[in-house]
Length: 437
Picture 1: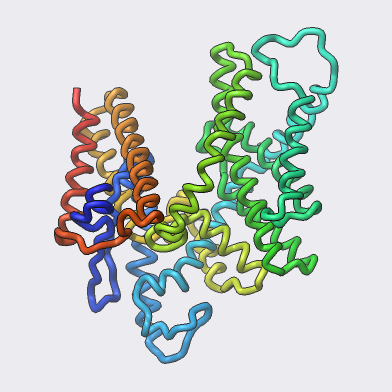
Picture 2: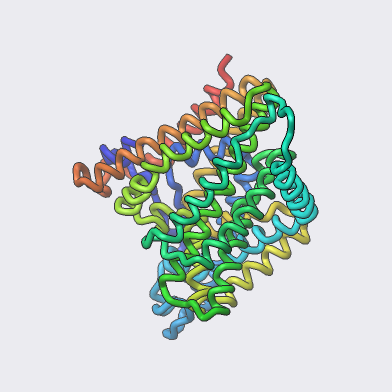
């Protein structure tokens, strides 16, 4: 990361245009993507790459071939003949991927519908039981007192309502509290029963966003301030769902070890508050340096949420393209294929999924040569280290660019093929280190 973005020895995003620029091959040679591919494994990585190959090597060439006329096609303001592959992806293919992702997220909720019913029933029953006086509560079941929980929750809701930058009125805050309770309860039970992979975060966040935006449109609230309010509701819900999933696993582990939930909950609250004081500034630094939502930092979920909210409220969403994506999602579901990785591949740039696939191949090589659980654990730890190290260096690079200590882009010393060769070598090295006795 430092060699490509600080010393500029080679490109971190080499690109090759093929067949008169109708095809494109690119790879984002960053260690974090290699680590992600290793952790998710070859099957999921292959599904993501398949989605990207369909988008970049089928959809984009077809759109380029059949759109050579001088007329413009909505939502673009440029003739397709004047566009390159990145432009076609941004104006057309990305919406198809968004439709597939939306369908996949909603289907994940449909699949756990029975669990949703049981969760709500159990949550309401447990909430009512908390108000009943008990003579003795076992140590392993002592939670934070409701005299702290309710005032704390009320204070957060009031802050969302009264702080002007959140752009939320009383109705949106009440709606957020209702949806937040609903989805957090679902997350806690599903994660507790199955694990963190059972939490459909994207589906629940998208559902919150769609419900909110549709209500706003029905009420005639289509000004920009309500778009900001809808995005804020989506962000708060997403953070609540993710935090609920993590803390549920922690509390489950603590229960098995005999720890007191109240102590864990206090530690979890401290662990949420302290990082949140810095995360916002880091996101601003990344946006200033890389521009969130661009090819350099696609941020697929964030871009998808913004696209859906803005499109529904402003009535500018290209529903035909989104509908095509949803039909593709339906076909994938009927074929009983894993939908979300494939949909994410359509939505993401090809450069990301090719790098993730190399990580998946490294994992496949490790699993082929050894079935030892120690090798598997060592490989996952190494991959996690690649992700963490890449993220830390990325923050340093972004801060250097923001404060103008170093340029964000410069001419590299070595040719593009060097990036691919060194990245492949890193992939092979990751597999070898995992297999080392």
